[in-house]
Length: 259
Image 1 (cartoon, rainbow, N blue to C red):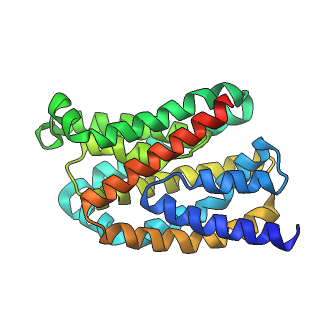
Image 2: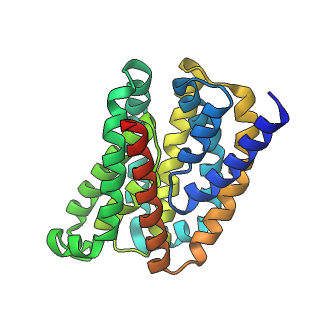
């Protein structure tokens, strides 16, 4: 590996960690960077999942104040119950990646990302159709939350680009909290999926550990910075940034799928 590759991967890791903490979609930065250094697509995908996980972990630490506020609001038991849902779904996603052709899913991913950005952008209107989260019964809220986490973690285990956009959009439909708190919960779900991915791909996937050693530390720094930045941004600004970034990610993925 030459110095240019090292600089490219370190810069991509820093940017991806920051973006993942704020909106998600950092894999769109690190994945092409890994490809550019010569890794084949599947190896780049599993290496990327392994490398960005520390960034998710640091973003959880960076958003710990919002997580503590969520727990104080009486959501601790519900949040803890999401852990097994996320673990099982992420494991299924990892299995799909390792056992099935990736090309077919490449055509689905852009529409999922664009759909998530649209859901977040029109969240207020959708709430009027499906009901405001504060009007949901505890049972309906819990079922909806588990469903959102399951499908988000399934997707995250498979590829994960713009996972944060999807999670923020979906969680916002069933949780009556600020964007900062929703983003904090998104960081936790992403980190849980990251743990599963590291274990699965570390054991069964073609991970390039030299690349991981470069990207991971940079992603840690970026994840912490991004989480702190997300907490300082007003909800409207944070939502707009996520919608714009999600749309860009979706369009780039769409271009890659049909070029």
